[in-house]
Image (spheres, rainbow, N blue to C red):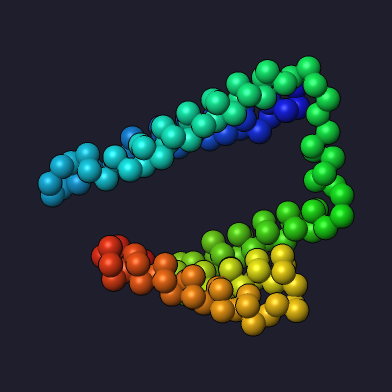
Length: 147
């Protein structure tokens, strides 16, 4: 039954996401439910995919399942822990220094963890370009205010 852990977590996360989506504030201009449509769509898609994933794994429940062992082999524990640390640092930096610079630091850190120091130029270029394009897309093209 270990193979049902992840799909079950995804279903619970989808339920929580949908419940929290309905608590979002309504719009004062135009359609009051406008801000809800996209998050609801994301929540429904998450739920559908999670249920399909659960059913696929349920069919295989009698088969041997050893995928969790891969979490403790080689660099995998280091990658998991360092990624979690980078996410924590990103959440701290996001409000303090804003989207653009915190995203650059976050992506640079992740790319250095995954690709190593040999690809440092590529890591920095990708982090900077992605951050700038994402910031420009949201801030200038979509008029979404970012910290």
